[in-house]
Structure formats: structure tokens, C-alpha cells
Image (cartoon, rainbow, N blue to C red):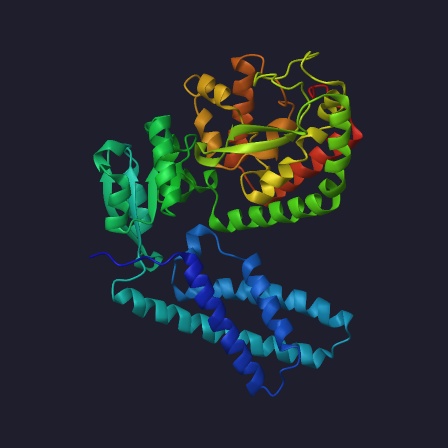
Length: 432
């Protein structure tokens, strides 16, 4: 009977509690508990900042774990020293705290590694995975993921297609599957949608093979991590960072902008034309799950869901200003706060557009692997607004997929800042 595989978050919590306990103990033995609470809080913050990448999360080799701990100690030392100098803490005291923390962390990491090895010796905490899709490179991927037992990966089975699995939900539960590898080009959009829904429901990590790099696998030798495009769905660390960024921005906008903007704009909309203040429309979110997207109403009531065109007669006088200034999009910060959207990501499309282009444009569905955004790379790259034909939509999708495959916190920040300056300091000819 397979044993339950703990998620890395459980490792992180256990490791952090162990760190805190030993740091506290060493501080007390050192005869100085001054600023202990500040030290412990800062240590937790440092561990969150240096949350490890997926390739090293479940790896329990002592050398790699100590290397991760060393990075954490260095970052802690830099931050702690800067704060201590501002409050004029004696250098001797700073050195003492730093030394005690270093010893405590080394002891903690060593104990953690050996405790986890013992735990795994009883058959627990293995990351059990399956591979779906008949591609020749699968054996190299299996070998890479399982050749070192310290990674905690355990290959369960291979299926040529999704139908071979049968009842995917029951199979995952029965076999305690924690990760699925597949090649998106070998699955239809319906199959990929089904796979995503089951994966999300059961908290399964879904890893898609990069279309661009899969052909070059024979040139990569054993370095097959390069062909596994984990950035398509992003690692848990990146998802946490992105969610924190979304919450910080959305809460700030809701409290300090929407709190007064909604009453003012709402009154102006009501005076300009009859109808509701908000335009609420179903849009496709992550995993093709539809949500209600909120915008300020900029068109006359009952205008349908067709895309806005230049000089569109449905747009009201106030609506024209709202669209040109992008103020109509501001209520979507509520969607971000609720978790339906992100600040940055592919723009959410209506169902008619999804149905129209899903089968016509290769990779169209892959844009739904992440949360849609208020703004995105497509928008700042000039693909905002109306998509007049299939070629213009294809260009937008190409840029959306480029964003997904190359996601990084710095990229989100650049897009956000560029959108901000473009919105308030320049005129966008495509905003109509």
C-alpha cells in the first residue's frame, strides 16, 4: 500500500519550527535573549524569501540542504547587520547573535536530513509520479527523476494517452499520485482541461514538457531539467510570490483608490446613462473555470458581448473616457483580491472568443494554465483591445505564451510599471 507523500510545505513548516526551537535554545544557552523575537521573525522571513526551487525541494542530501542553509544565514546576516547598525547595536553583540544562529542552523539542518531519511526508510514521503504521452524521451525523464534516491521521487506508471488511465480521479487517490508529467501537444484541449481540473482538485503538480525544447533532448544528455517547462504552471514558491504581490497591490488600490473612485465614477455613470454602474461578465479563468469579471460599465445597457470597435456606437460619452483612461478596468482589482485574477497575466477572454479560436490557434488553451491578468505582456507589447482577425489573435496568443514560459517576479514588476506609466502619462491608440 503506497504511503502518503508529504508536500514540501510540510517539510518547510517542520524545518522552520526546528530552526526556531534550536535558535531559541542556543540564544538562551548563550545567556542573551535580547531581541530574540526579532531574530526569529527575521529568520522566518529570510526562509520565505529563499524558498527553494522545485529541483531541490524534496532533495534530502546533507550537502544541498546545508548549502541552502548557508544562503539563508548569509542573507539573514546582511539584513540583521543593517538593522542593528541603525539602532546602534554593539558589533560584539551582532557577532554573537550571528554565531549562535549559524551553529543552531547547522545542527537543525543536519538533524532534519537524518530525521527525514529515517522517515523515508519506512516507505513514507515519496513523491510518486506518472507520465502521460507517447514520446520517446520519457525514459530519460524517468531516469533523471529517480536515479538519485535522495530526491524522494518514485515512478509509478506510464500511459500512452489519458484514456489508458481510466478513472483518473480514483487512480490518483488509490495510488497516492503527487505529480503528473505530460506533453501538451499530445493531448487535446479537452483532455488537457480534464487533466488540469483533476490536478487542481487533488492538489497534484502538473508539469508540461516544453514544446520548443523537447526536440533537442538528445543534445541535452542527462540535463533533462531544461526540457521540463515547469514555469508553465509555475512553482509553488513563484505562486506564493505572485499571490503576495497581487494581494499587496489589490488591497492598496481597494483601500486608497476604489474606496472613493467607485462612488464618484458610479454617480457620473448614472448621470450619463441609464443602467447599472458595473458591467459584470463571465470570463475564462485559470483551468478554463469561468468567473464574473467586474468592470465599470462603458456601454449602453444590453449591448451584447461583441468586442468593442473603433467609434463603436454602443460606447457612452463617459464610457469613452473610462476606456481611453483604462479606469473601466479598476474594479478588477476586486477580482484580484478574490483570487480570480492576477495583476499581470493573459487577459481573460469571453466564451465566444474561446470557442472561436480554441481549435484554430495552436496553444490557445495553454494561456489558461495561469490566472488571467488586469494587464499583461500582450497589452504593453501593443496587442491590446480588439482582435480584428485570426492573425491578430494569434499574435496576442504568441506573446501570452511567451510570458507564461518566461515568467519571473521582475517581469511582472516591469509590466506593471510600464502599464502604470502608459495609462497615466501617454495615450494608447488601441484603448477604445
